[in-house]
Image 1 (tube, rainbow, N blue to C red):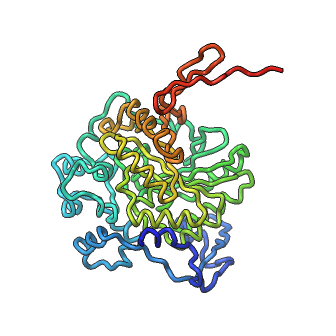
Image 2 (image 1 turned 135 degrees about the horizontal axis):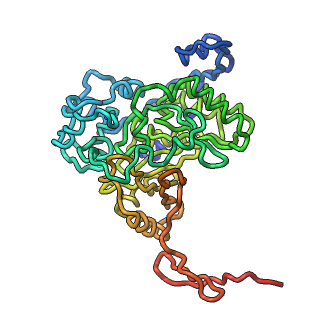
Image 3 (image 1 turned 135 degrees about the vertical axis):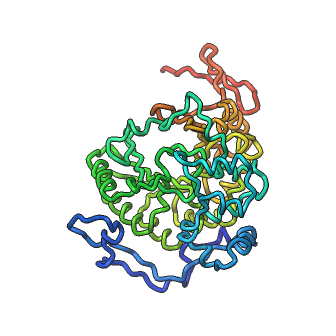
Length: 435
C-alpha cells in the first residue's frame, strides 16, 4: 500500500550511499554564501557532501493534473525542484486568475497591495486551491480579500511587542533562557494573518544580512543563560543549504546552547524543499527540533506527509503550531481531523494559537470561548497526544498564556472540586498529610 511505502521510506536507504566526502571545502567560502560580505579573514566552510542517488517525491494525482494543465512544458524533475517552486511563486492577479476564478473582493485586494503584506503562493500550494469556491479554507489563508483593509482600534503592527524585546537586530529576547532569532524576511507562501506582516516579504534582506547574523550570534554568546534558540523569520527553510549549514554550525559552537529549533511552514507549502541533502545537513545538529505551521487537514497531502516522514526518520522531533481561524478550523470536526492527521505522520499537535490582532485580521479571529470549546471537545475524547496547548500570545509582550476549560471548580473544605471531560464532578483530597 502507498501509506506503508511512505512510512517505510528511509532517509538513508540501504545500498544507495556510494560515498561520503567529509572535509574542508576551500572553494566554498563565506563570500560564496554571502557575496556582499567584504570582511576578512574569510575562513573556509566545512561541508559534508553525501554522494548518493536523489530520492524523488511522489507527486499526488492532483498535483500531476495541475502541472500538466498549467505547466505543460515543465518536467517532473523541475516541478519537484524547490528552487523552481520558489522562483515561480504566483504573485499577481493576472497569473492567479488563470488558475482559479477570483471574486471581486479578491481582485481588488490583490490590486491594492501597496503597503500591505504581499501575495506569494507556490505553484504546489495553488494546486491545492479550489478553482471556484472562495470560502475554501486553504484559499482563504493565502488569497487576500478586501476585509484586510478594515483595521480595528485594537489591532497593531507589532501586536506582540517584539521590537521592544529586541536588544540587537534579529533577536527577540523575551524569556530568560531562550531567544527568537529572525534569520530572514522571506517565506515560500505568505499567510494572510501573519503576525510579522510588518516585516516579511519586504525584500530588504536586512534579516539575512551576514553582519546582522554575526551581531545576533555575538549577543547569544555573551548571554550564557540562553540555552535554546528558535530560528524563525520569515521562514528559515527558504535559505540555501549552505547558509543554513553556516548558521547552524556557528550556533552549535556556542557551549551554553543546548537545543536548536526551527519554525517553518515550508513542509506544508513547499514540501519539495525537504531534500536528501537538507536532511543530511540538519542531522548534523542534533538536538534539533522543528515546529511546523499547519492549520487544516487538507494541507496534509501525500507530498507534505513525505516531507514530514523524511524529517521524522532523521530523528528530528516535529510539533505543529496551529492558528485558530474563523470558518477555517474553528469547528470540532475539522480540528479533530487535523490533530489526528498530524499524529499519523508523527507530528505532535503542540500549540493552538488565538489569532494575533494584526491590522486587517478581524475576519480571521474567533472568540476565546470557541478555542476553549475545541480544547474541551478534544480533552478526554481523544488521545492526549492529540490535544495542543491553547494559548494567547499576550499583546504588548506578555508572552504565551495557556488557556483551559474550567476543570477546577474550587475548594470544599480540604477537597479540590474537579470537573472531568464528561462534566462529572470529583473530589480530590488537597490537604497535606503531617506526621
